[in-house]
Image 1 (spheres, rainbow, N blue to C red):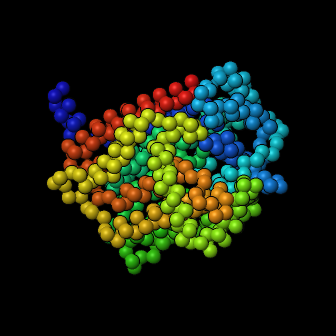
Image 2: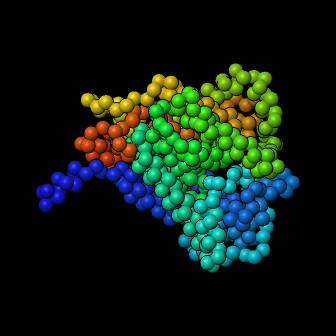
Image 3: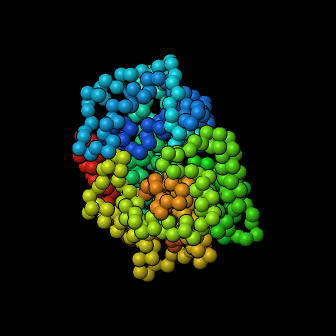
Length: 462
């Protein structure tokens, strides 16, 4: 027995398997403890996935609305929780759920407006769309299909993040903690494509952590990485700048690292022409919002635009940080203050872990790569904020409306590129003992993480 215990301790604990276990538990908690439609814009995301499952890759324009033809029975099956939004004192009704759970897919179709989601590229919806298609063919009800779609999204996201953790040579602990945040896994266990996008960005970042200036990657490897960045950029155009990151880590004589940006730019341009421009409608025109008017104002007042961005951050940066960690429901389900503090501390320690181990000499990142990564992540963050200024804010407003902390989650995995390389992929720290201790400490945090998520959802909705 003693020899068995010693041999087990000598084998490195798998951070990826640890994550897979706890993330699976947390996704199941999110899927079944969160009533339908109780993550931001989940209903419209489900409609968009249905549209993709029907083979309709773009939206449909009808006057000042953009959406698609959706089976008539879908909306009645999902509206039972609408009165919970913005009312944390209200709880989920099992009676309403039982009534809605038997509503079948109808053969008649109605036009449904989901203008804020209709312009999203279909790539992030493909796993969910496939699940919806199979569920409809097997005779599941609308609500049963909804939960199958949630589970599909959740486990595809988990598999992407698990692969990222297993492959990563830099910032593995950072990627693991980001991928296990309550907000990340609550989005994963919903019908939104946001969880899939976070998983794709984590995988792209992990692959890049394995690249050095001396690497000899084939053209096929670069094309595969390009596909990941293209999916991200088409779904969220401000993430296009992140596709420049491979060029920051490559030899200057090799042009192939420019493939991710070049192909992502081309894919985004094609999607803009085919999927965005024909179907984009003006939001909140009655409140003074104008896309073209705001762009003109920004071009005429670049310094004021920068001042508005800084002013918004000064006002709301702490709120954005809490939302990134986890403010569930329609931002009406906060977690405890103690958990926010604990998670912020764990994130800082995970980010700095490569530099905290005395006596270790992991390979440091090159200065030019560090500076390029910081500049690209900052520019992409600015792009996210300015895009929301254009779409959701009145012209010349002194604050940017519509920002939520979750919008920055797909960018944060790329910060792993700033960190020192570990001797082996998937390692949290240099040296076996330090790695084992790190995995054990993260197991404690993930236990608290799972309990906190479950308690918050139960207290809010049940």
